[in-house]
Image 1: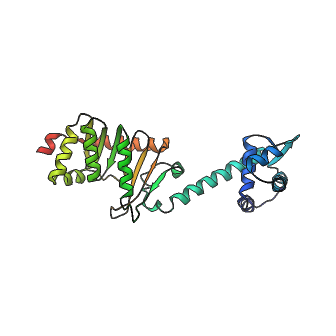
Image 2: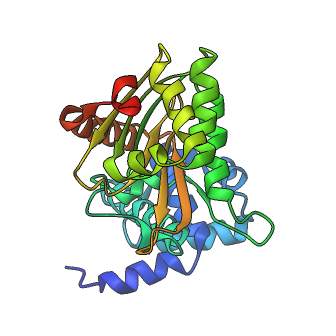
Length: 266
């Protein structure tokens, strides 16, 4: 019975990306040595050493002139590929994860593997906000959920809803609406939005822990620090993230109070 150290086996694979690629290629389909060398992009001497090592571990076997992965080889390939993808996601999120409200974002972080991360820079200090506005400017419908209502966002939503280019359902914290109503020009923008045929706004007293937008094609999260300063944003087309965001919006929508023109003018 083989008594191999699992960590040593991980190290064996990690020392050479080619080993992982060869094993994954053989999991996908049996291949001749020539076809395998071409598909993975390794020399025949290198491939020979890899196949020897994988065969010794009984991860690969041969059927005539074709190599294929064994059941244990498939098990290893799946595991190491998943681990590599998870580490790639962790590396991608490492610099922003402290601002992701993981208690609220009830979906595995691996669903953000392909997310676009936008952070401020010296030349674009408002880059996360601009990304949010870019997505809002491209969509026909948006579900909005936030404790705040950025002035730029307010103006864009007003222009697009009044023109009939955007339908929206927004849920906002009470403090955000009160701040807008206290400023004359912003109050007029809010009035226009509420009066627009395609817009519905609801207000909640409960704290909203995350700023989320669901557009036609993307789900966008604004990430803030403890002082409320925007530090980054994430947006993705992942279906699981979208389903989570829609469910969260629905929960707050259900407890929100509809905002009317009369409420604002009172």
